[in-house]
Length: 269
Image (tube, rainbow, N blue to C red; front, side, top):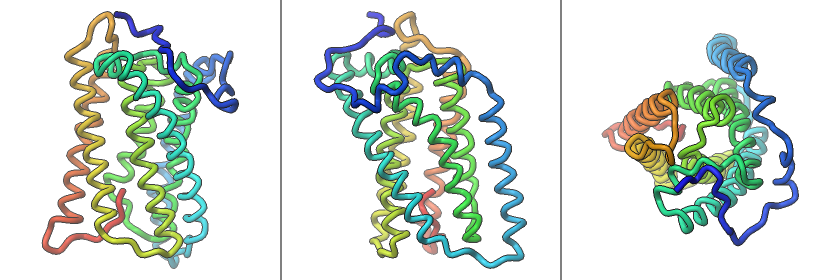
């Protein structure tokens, strides 16, 4: 069964704004590495230079900008998760778990094409999370900057550069879902509401589950690799290493933050 052209008879229709990229071959406009690499270099420069700049300054009170930033990203993630998870549900219902994992038609459907493009762009926009940490003179931990940097470049690579879409429905919907919880948490905190510590524990635990499922998806793609589940060596290796490293780093963070006798009270990355 070839899933490349799978469309499915799904019981929901794209919204008008989700048709924005209909008839536009956006991949032809986004195959250059110049922009993402420049943004990534600027991101690294912001981390290094921003920290040095703030060493001699007092931290800024960015509660209101953080509230706006987190609220906008929370709304974006909530809507994105609802739309992509609905697609995942119908795809699983029609094609089963293997059909879901091996589906490569995510870029051929109006709903998933729209949210795929916005998803990739959002990974670079989320570099702004780090700016808030820097200007508030908080510690930018390895997990934070490594996660932001690698997920943006990986997403750009698989969606725009090499067009490897197998597994993308799983990766994207899970990321949207976790970020819906995470940015809502950040927005509530920025509004000055004190929340139980259990909520931050839940969010970090959810991120670990996301990485476990990401690893499981990559292993499945390797095991099921065939003419009906096509993926490149570069995609399989980079995805497996990325999700494996995330899993190790998130487990390490969870242990240090919540299980040690004297936990380091850090924000969820």
